[in-house]
Image 1 (cartoon, rainbow, N blue to C red):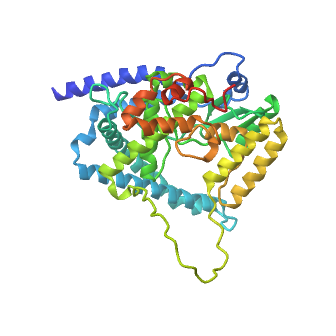
Image 2: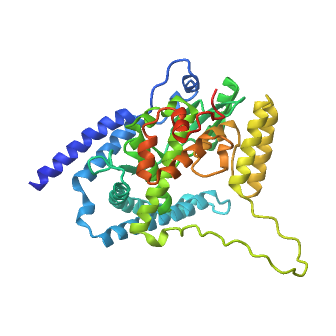
Image 3: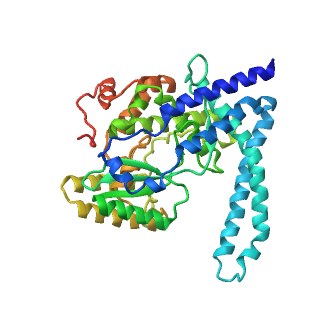
Length: 435
């Protein structure tokens, strides 16, 4: 009977979710290590993963049992996604108006002025509560299909199943030593901390432990179901869903299980997930949303010699290249720290932050913790990773593997950076973050 089959599928999914939640949840740390020392400052404001996960499991269990996308045509599914993204945009615009009303010094009674917009917010959020679960189910199915077609399956299906939940995300407190860029702690904090609370926490940790600290926003968390932030950018949303699912895939294999063992393994994990996220998202866009698919890079023809021309005005300076400038900043900071010039390195990073700010990149703090966090995402050359060879090694392995599945199924079974070096024939090369 169909209803019995649905119940069995829902029960199976719930059991699988419970198992994976145990495997994928935040790991415990040994007393006395840097993680536990930092928690002395954060225990009262840490994010409740257990409560969130069980609530999300209930939602996903219902979605699995109903399997609503099965009752919609392909065109209807695409319309649901389009309507959902338009709804999120409308919610964000309406919230922006509310914020302006309460911030304006020219409005005497903001509470009264905002009434129609507050009422509209309630209506829009009700529509969102009805539409969002269906959109999630559709995008899960599309990402799952793309992953399967790319060969990332076990017995014909992606495992674990692709499951994600749109949700306010925890903040992350990142801690690095001052003398070297290295992530020693990444602690999830409650979603609603004010900017004043974030700054106060950073100062408390830095003054109490003589470290570099930074509270950062994140785009997703590899729990199960995975956590993804609200956005109207469909390509980014698909990439994040696939990125976090890749973490789930790796967590069932040695690379993911070894995530916390060294900075090199963290970079291997994050770079692999970034590469996978981009390729799976591109496959989804090509199949379902081709109008949003970026064009393939076009190779520029070789320049031809030209006849002498009339004198030209001085060329305008090249546009500001964020990745190149951030790469330069990281390399210089590493060099200063290697020479023991900690204060000079910190002053240099602050001076560079002001340059980025003047160019429109509103970086609140640029310090060792910033690079410890962002440097692990090394799927593209340059950027915050500096000269760390781990990211380029992962990219080289991807280039040699041919297919995405061959690449992931090779690197997934590695549990050390040395194994990656050996696979590339670079056993003599060491990562700059190695002790």
